[in-house]
Length: 392
Image (cartoon, rainbow, N blue to C red; front, side, top):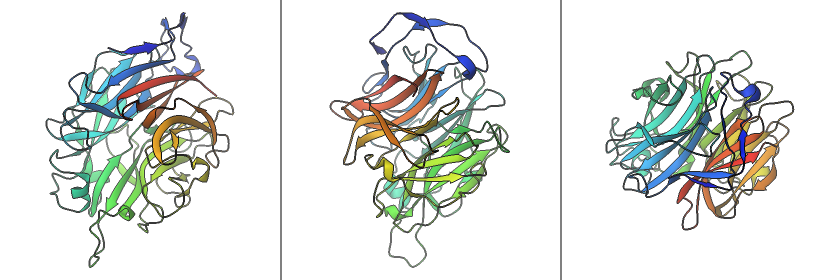
């Protein structure tokens, strides 16, 4: 059952300019709710949150439902809960992509700005193999990481079966592959208006003759994939392929800035450079980067973990970043703002001092921002909470 705290008086949610398809409904406002509790609903653990707002104002909260494991491989489904009241209450759990003993995860949802359909890109691997084995090249092509896309034409109530796009977006020689996780981006301005962009990461194989196994963090790199036809076909965009060990781009989040450029913010996976966050910009819709990834020093409090970015809509609205705020531990989920398009960030507020890990951001309405994040008292993965905050 969904847990809702600090319920206040009944009020109408303000949709304003953010509802392409207006929806009139009134509901109780709240500060937080808990759509996922590990150990409930037939899953040992829920992880890897992702959230989007549909044209009708419905919030779709995706996660990995891990049946009997707390690890990243095994029998894992992509699951979903819907909210039609701004994240206070959540509908029943839906299985969007059934692992059937294998691993389906890393949800990266977006809303097609032309049709309003929800497009979901996810990753797959055989449930019997691990990330380490994949990076070492110890698996078959069928067992390794693969990429799939699904669509929902009815506001997230139903999704098509997963359709494989691996051959379109994964070059030969790559081993690990991860979509997002967290919401992807639909471009709404500029020459590539309507394009869908998913920030991803991968690992490459060592060069012939190297004594490396491929498991070393230096072989991680970032990239983007994009679609110009509503998610029916996909292309590989920029590729970060330095593999120097200095900056190791891993899980990546993206946002479209007011001037139309894309901003990418990545987890630095054990790179030798100072700090745990990297960022870069693209002026051509994710096809190339304006410059290579560099350290984002103003997010120095963030540990090695996934994070989320979101460009708020409205005049002089800031760019947001969410993530834990203790450099050496996954705890104290916080929110940062940037008023210079990602060049610098300032801490806005700490949501909680509890343990916390992955997160995703969504604009609920003109006055409210939502943070869907992993948190708990025993571990950072006890629950996935949804916190509503005033838009800065």
